[in-house]
Figure 1 (cartoon, one colour):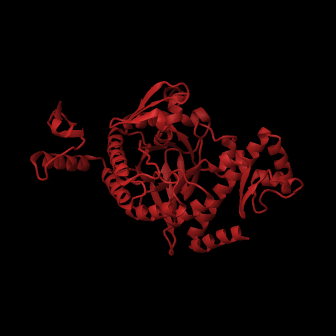
Figure 2 (figure 1 turned 90 degrees about the vertical axis):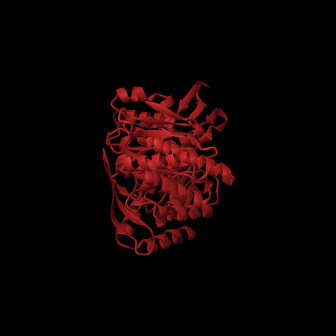
Length: 422
């Protein structure tokens, strides 16, 4: 049975015993201390108290005595992830230019897929018929799926954000589509990902405080709706902290998500054009307000330096297209910095990309050969470059895990930057 609370523009839903089970509302103007304000407060408290408790999938194994860096494990349906961890991005059910076997060999533990793109093509129902994303793409390890909020943010001219969700046109054929927070969860459950993300509203940079506050509040309401429809499949659901570049909004968003209760907490809306120093400031303003016994995920970040600084500030999980995208553009990551393989200086260079690297590419191919392949636009160039860059990222995370375990992370961090200055 449903009662409309017209004074606040929302609905409350009751079961047969007249117990409130869910509601949503948009406050316009309610007098402080009024009866209806008190009723809303009481109903909110009731909902929080009836949310099923969340048992953390994270186990801390070691911590730095000098900073917030930590290492641990995240238990999922398809295996345990050692953290801190980098997740290669496989937006369309493939990490570009490499096979699942390559990913295992280079040390990837978990990969990322994208709900928005897989919803549009080939469709989550088709993937479900194949037994889920793991069987569809022949990957047996854990998978995290982003909800699609960032992609909708990227298609602002084709999208309209409302209280109900996101109305948008397909970037493929212009078809009108809709994705609400409940839809995002149901689609990810059909995909069978190990870690699902709530639908959020990504805030651009720069954004004024009013814009950031409204988007952050909407993300919070969507997060609650996402949590309410989550099925008991064993899949994990992470909340996303927004707030723009306003520390108090991020702290408020973190507190709201903790009240709802999630399996992990992500930081969204960073690396969207802001200076690096500001991104780090937002990490320092947010991470301490998240529960330290749950995994922390920094979305869409970043460079090797970003990973080191994120771990330093207590982040456990990262993803970014940078290693594969840069590989296809001829930029390779090494222990001493970046290497642009098309440069003429490498025309006769017999050395591997990185003499400290033991990846398949570095064990078997010279810089001269890789330059030749790239100059000729041979497909093999993208494959070999991608293997190297992904191996570098995964090895960097393994080195950080080792340094944290041995409580020498600060020494590692100093050595990391010293090598780049040579």
